[in-house]
Length: 462
Ligand SMILES: Nc1ncnc2c1ncn2[C@@H]1O[C@H](COP(=O)(O)OP(=O)(O)OP(=O)(O)O)[C@@H](O)[C@H]1O
Image (cartoon, rainbow, N blue to C red; front, side, top):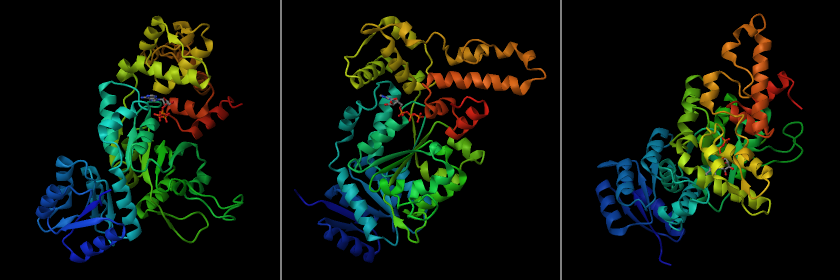
């Protein structure tokens, strides 16, 4: 195998020399350039396997070099060397397409990790091949899904934090897993955490780990999620549900690229790619003060939107087929077929719970169907009118009450009346999610804690 080459672009001879020595100890060849112009010429002539560029160059800045490489040589990963603490520049470089950044003074361990990750990119399939392979994870051919697959292929090559947003059940976690599995960290762990499901008092220890005896109940040392994801990806699902106190600690861990387990005196360096998701509008959460602006800025370097199922109903037949195949495989049966009336019924449904809801509907229908064909009746959609209809007639979901004409029923009794409506909504949502509370909270757009509080208040808790 031929030796790989790294182009170092920096106007300081000392830095060029330090980087050159480190790279040669890693068995790599290096070449260097001191100006933007020289860098462009060497990229054309050498087509290096990686480019490391400083931000400030005598004849321009590193971001224009990132843009040049992205435009003309998108297969060459480029990393930016930034001055210590210049977060804005690092983020602009990532947005422009830099694979990663490293700040001065350069820590050699971090440099070696960065170089190894970048060079592993060259072993990855090219974007077109990734897109084809990914169809097994992200089913669909609607324009929004095709564009999403292309975006995933590009983002997989970068180390930039990505924020994925979209309604509940649209496939945000599927997208996060694909970004991970199509990139250079694929062989390392992918750790997903539902930020809304961790009790606030355990959060710090869950994220950063703890030492034995650091608090009552800490009977042994425990690794945190950051350590578990070392070298890989940490996926913060429902990131908007992080309490403010934890947001401060998370921001620090991201800035310092280090964590301190509860009860420890030392910090440990981390090498983790952060992906996050929420069905909430994170910018609006920042506006209302529920989410810190500085953390938002850090995790939302690149923004990915996953379209709702309603916006891509043309994918319904393909999705139903794949989901039925999965469901049947899980129970060792052969996949049933969907009667055309069943397909028509699905096409008229609005899927507030998106693909996850489709999956639940099909799972139940599979259990109910008598032969190997699923009928419209097996889907049990009749008592669940589309969202617009529900909003339009003021019904609470079971079709039994019409709040718009029932105002008088609330006179002198508003609390009890509203509680009754809330109880009906919660019961219907729980039933729809087969009593899975995490899914119910997501369906209703509330946190897990809020759901539990409401269930207790309304005496619906079992
Ligand atoms: N495009 C798709 N192709 C195949 N399966 C999909 C697709 N989108 C979602 N799914 C399936 O739907 C279910 C829900 O997906 P996922 O958990 O990724 O959604 P989510 O948006 O993260 O949900 P939540 O907001 O509730 O966290 C999973 O079983 C997933 O495999």
